[in-house]
Image 1 (cartoon, helix red, strand yellow):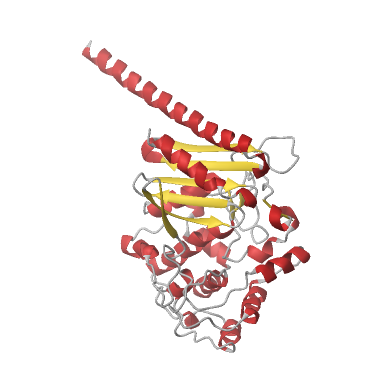
Image 2 (image 1 turned 180 degrees about the horizontal axis):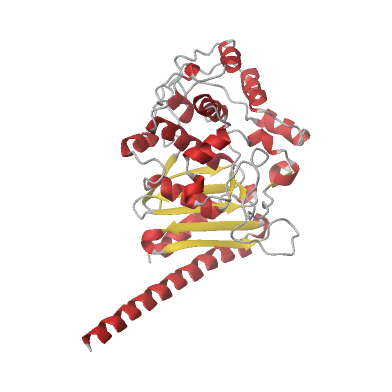
Length: 371
């Protein structure tokens, strides 16, 4: 009798847990459905919540994969994550440090190609003073290329195929050094293009192949994460959604991805794999040595100030009183990890002009998880 009672109690607890989980999933879907209905110009919304300690690994979608589509957006459709790529690059550098291949204190001159050294030194940069950590934190003093003039050129020449070297040359053309390392904070994709060149210099492999290996994609089953045009899409990976920037008249399908491909952005992924990457990164599954991983939280204060909360490829912030670490992307993507509740959240908004919906969605999700 006692055993029957115990078994019945276990079943009741399991059923209750299942009912609660179902209820949370229904609530999460209701949130994105409601927000989409009130903001239909967002075209599509994709969300994943990864919270194993709470028994939640849920993906949801609302809207459409492109404007005027007749079929609904599917939760496992991938999108370009743009600058949400930067934490992947930072993690790759730290993995190389964990393996004893480099340190973030290395001067970048040690690892760059002769062509790149000549290019930047001819513009007055002292590459022995600039350390890898300065690239990761945008405190290198290097002038970037991604400004209104550049974006206007891309708009007028959407099919132009950029190379990384071409973009590095563009950065040098844009202006002189902003100062010495740690003089100023200036967010600039050029820093991360130099990081991917460093990855290649250390590994003797294309950076995207090295990242796939070092970040353990195969081990974790990340088959829907890749650099389009540099790597083949997974055999079972669904079609990329269209992403829009209404203000600029952009449709991601009509712009050659190369303008944002070589480490400053470039990864395409699903919300599930993006959130799971962050969860595994912050729970020691990718960088196993804690001392090495903790360097990702380095903040470099500059003489001129600015950049508060920007670490090594991560933005530190808070949501509903919880500390968060993550990174946004130009196309309307956002991924966060909240260590206090051991939860990752990825949100993709198809229309960049509605990107502020990311904050509302994340806020509502955390409210549900706290009930």
